[in-house]
View 1 (cartoon, rainbow, N blue to C red):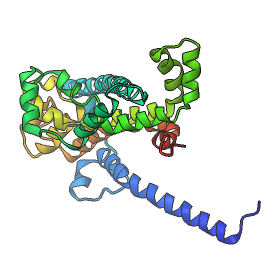
View 2: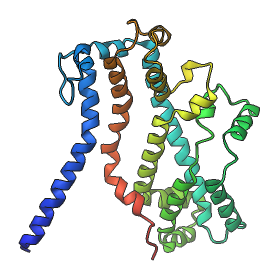
View 3: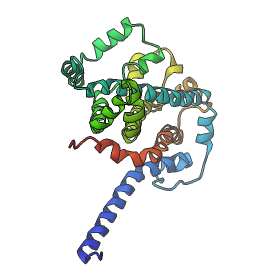
View 4: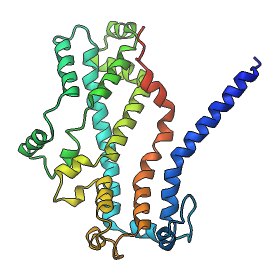
Length: 290
């Protein structure tokens, strides 16, 4: 099929528009990378835009040589993996029973779950509750309160609804129980959704710092990388920060801040290419129910 001139022109416009969007998204990242590799004298004069000047790797050596930062990076990676696995498990076991029409009290449970999506007690009651449970200053305060997203559960439930009812009936005729049906039928058919939700949960946990900022004050060994970066950026004008954070140089230069941003950003960006092919299918499956 030969495309018309108007179609070709339209394709060219779309490609140019997409390339422009890609460039706009890459510019801030390229600027941070260039500033992290540049000599501080060029940064002071605001001469660095997209290409480093006075190539200098001292900031990266300083960051990699900081034991506290390296610990925070690995700790956040393990925390992200653990929270993602737990959140997926909680999402699946919450969404799957709600797909059964014969579930007693199913509509009431749906209503209660949706209620928590729109209404919450607020920060202070939440803090009082976690304090009464003895979860403050522990790693569990970063795991349990955010282990389930109602929005993601609804996506998972919609995916389960899109599985033909005949497959469940066939499995039940063959003697499969609810758990076996879930493991052998529903989960294999929901891989795109699982991958997409895993990406949502992982990015949310990796980028999260507000919960640690509120609930962890004394144990800096439990600081996730984003809170560690937040403290550095907030206190970068203080000459005492270098000693407090374990850096050998007095004060924090702009180069060091940019290097820290790169180390905190790149790891989660590397996850996207592996899950990209599942993303579109994951967020749209179940959107139209026949």
